[in-house]
Image (cartoon, rainbow, N blue to C red; front, side):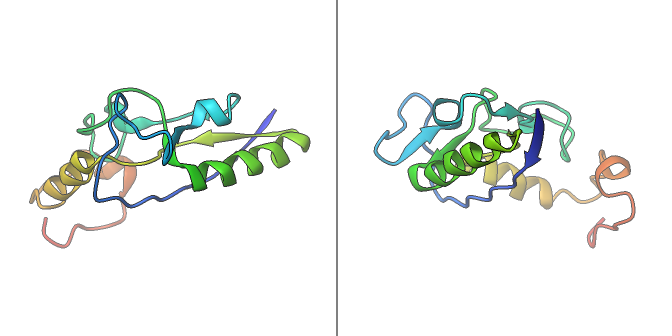
Length: 125
């Protein structure tokens, strides 16, 4: 099966807990698209920060029910054509956003520059 890369950006100011998620508002991707593949790197060191990111506890993706309905429809349409979905990220907990903000302010941090942004200079490095 071929896979289609889909980038979904969801900005949040809150964080649904995996254990306390409101099922009337959010859903797990694996429940709606069971054949989806995952490449959720923020739980590992293999990401642009070079360290696991706060807030990622497992390689699962959570989306709003509206986004999930659209993804499930796209997955079904793509499946008919022999394609699948690869999920890179989903709803980000606030502690993840806070981690990104702290890291953005870390002057001189170039741990993964050679991998993820070799030709870009950080304005405050």
